[in-house]
Length: 381
Image 1 (cartoon, rainbow, N blue to C red):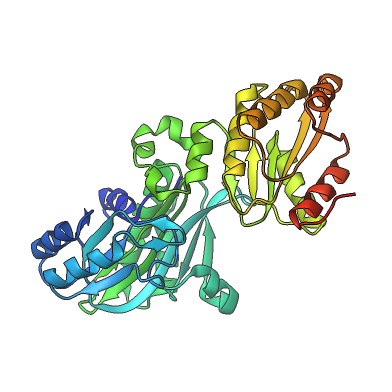
Image 2 (cartoon, rainbow, N blue to C red):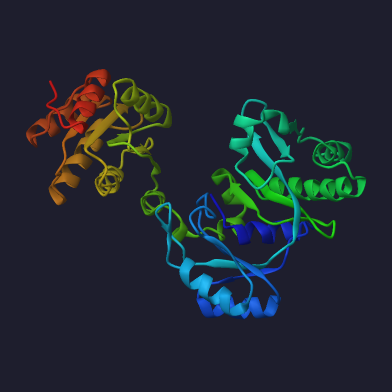
């Protein structure tokens, strides 16, 4: 789960990270009032779950409250990577002398949180890693003991030569680690971590991604979810108890089981196609899940063909077949559908589909190749 910058900053402030004051506005008038309260120059920042806000025009400096109102008026309602901006963060501007990057990510290989720091802040860390990897220091943290002060100092000395700044940065990194662990994060970063012209070390931006598996024990964090800032189809899928991630291709995939879903997408790519989504209906035999899955996939205008790939273990293939029939009777399909079913009650499922005008295969490769061909506008063999 992504949270907004202002929410991540609130979490880091609670841990003692120095962050310039700021408040959220939903109207230009509110932005002006906040700017008056803060005094001096402010930065107006779009609050959406998308990178590249600055390049899209979603981060602007305002020298006066009136200018803050004008800037907020331009930013509110704009689209950034398909997401509408409904809120802006109005925060005090800082005089920047230098910028650094500090982040923690959960590393699956080492099964540990890994700190990544770089004196090259203010730009994407991926860009730094690709062009100047020597400017990144990585440090795995043993969660039995947490981040130790000497480790924080080691990270700080990679960023700064001045001992005062090293101590300030080390304190911030200790707080960032606490925030990461206490809030079930899979990623937490400060970019940029800046040194002001006065010599203070402060966090100007903050980003946190929360592991969905942690939300049951952290209701206060789940309450931070903003569905207006998320992909609508992913919100719909989550509310329908489906695991769904939208992608950029044209083959809509409806599969049961995460492993089979990944294998299906790999096979779509192998045969020259591009998957439009990851959609796992899970092990349930509830036909309603199939109905919801089809509704979500067919709502995507980029989908040119639908591929069902069902391996019936716990899932009964006849229930899936009934779901397909129910869904297509209620909303007739305008694009081709390819169905692969095998496993529990396979013969019954095939009969249900045949009686309702559908053809189905038990061969996975055959079905994937057919779906890819149909998505390209060709006639499948």
